[in-house]
Length: 348
Image (cartoon, rainbow, N blue to C red; front, side):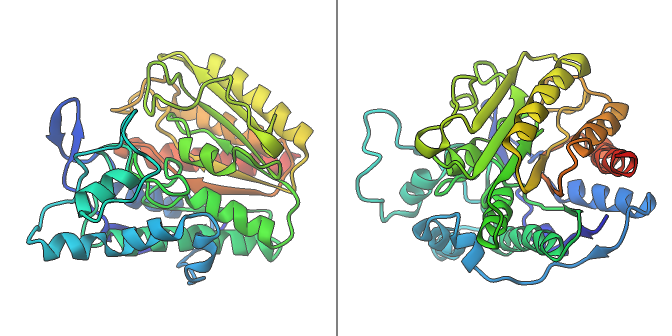
């Protein structure tokens, strides 16, 4: 299996995030991708290549132009105001404040307009890192366009919390959505996205919620109890052309493999019935029992079984890296999914 990876991810290294009322070191750190890459090489998963540059156009197919301009300019504006610390929001347009009015000129006001939490710090290297992360996904997608059955986009920063015009949850550009749109633009009629990250892929859902050419299925912690709280409920099933194409599986905190795998089985049934041309996986492994910010109880062997079940669908499959914050285990768990998939595909 080809892996696409860029060292540019290290250019984004947030120093702090606001969690539980305290500023603390970011859980989303460069060592996450480094650990996965080391495991890919140790297990001889396959060739590792650097991304090509497909430009901004495929990113702009998913994300709002004003939002992209903001991301490109935010750090320079912050530095011009005399700051050298991370840029974090401090004001948001909550209920009964105007959300459809003029976007503030002030940087902090504009940041609050585009951001929904305090866990996505912007640093001097953030734009280049997220741009390259999107190119990683696009390069893996292009490899499949040329005929490969599978590829692994080792993206960092992750992307599934980023919507068409908002960021949060460590995510700025939605790598999965960008790759999915590229498949569609190049001739695919239907694409399915399966999000196995512990946290609901609220950004991905927002982007495709009213579309019938993308099926989205997400298995995650119940938003009544878990981040991102305000999206991911079972009654969110799509609107308009997308009615019936959104499937959420909110699970109780503490859920282990028996409960989680039952949700996977149902999601795979939905995907098979949809009959997509290609499957894209938001590969988060923060479902691991020792993840510091998650509450599921999957163990490392479970990820082999996860990969095998995905392979049983018999679909061309693109894996895109998302969350996972137990840094010592993230490489084993992510690569277990990929090896489980390869083993399952070889027996299909």
